[in-house]
Structure formats: structure tokens, C-alpha cells
Length: 169
Image (cartoon, rainbow, N blue to C red; front, side, top):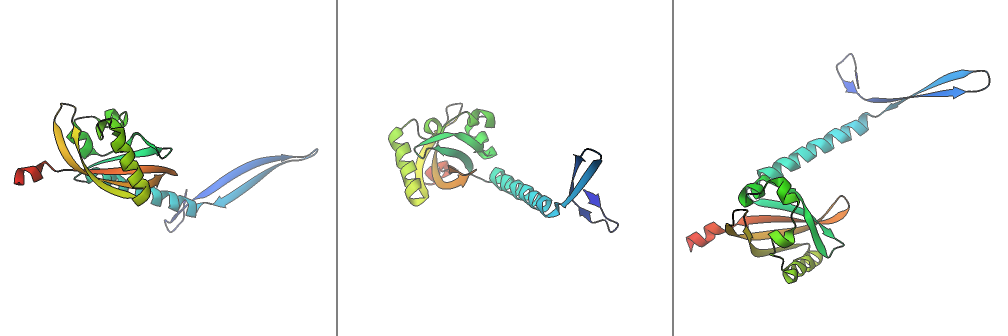
């Protein structure tokens, strides 16, 4: 990074190569303007920070996992703070868990139904319940979305705690 007299910062990449022949030793200096590349990198970082803030500031529990070969769900790869607090597990503990046990109580029929619905409609809403680490059970309305993450099919689950709905009835 270089700062110009007008305080504008620009990025360059320098490459030095040695060239030899029988009589001479030369140095070759190549300077490339990488300002546009650096700006794209900075914008991606800002975008990722915004995503993380939205993800972690949401009112609902959110989970992300890969779909393995489109037929099963892998362990959680992203979990927001609400999910961690609600379920009384650390993010690390949750990242070692799989939706099949935490969200579907190991019901293979239910897992297959949801995965098929995601492949067909790209989105589905269903009701289920979660059990926290201390054994508290709470019902949730879960909105599931199919999307690509790192060029792999993935599922985003947004779980809204619906205990308050039962209190109103």
C-alpha cells in the first residue's frame, strides 16, 4: 500500500525476478496495480461483517448446515447467538451436532420429507420442538431455506420460539 501526496491510498504488487545469461545478471521488477482487487476484498469483508451482524442480532435461532449429497444433513456449520443461548449449548458444542438429533429427534422419515421439500420448493415451514441441554422443551416454527454456500447445497433453518402462542390460547 502506498499513500500519495493527496493522502489517497493505492495498492501495488511488486515482483522481482533475477535473469541470468552467460555474461549478465539482471533484475526484473514488475509492478502491478492491484487497487481494484483490494477494493473488492475490502467490500467482501464489509459484506461478511454485515451478514454476521444480522445473523447474530436476529431474534430467532438460526442454524446453517450442508446437505450431504443432497440426501442427509451435515453438522451445523453456523449457529447464531440466540440458538446457543436458547438451547444452552456453546456454539462449539452445537457445531458438533447434527439437525437429525437436535431438530428432528432422529426421525429419518421427517428428515427425508424436509430435504425433499427443500429440493422441490427451495423453502418450507414446519413445526417441531427443541430440547435444551438442561432438558427444557420448547416448540418452534421452523422456516427452512435451500441455498448454495461455498458451492455446496446448504440449508438455513430459522426457528421461532412459539411458546408465547400457547400462553395466549
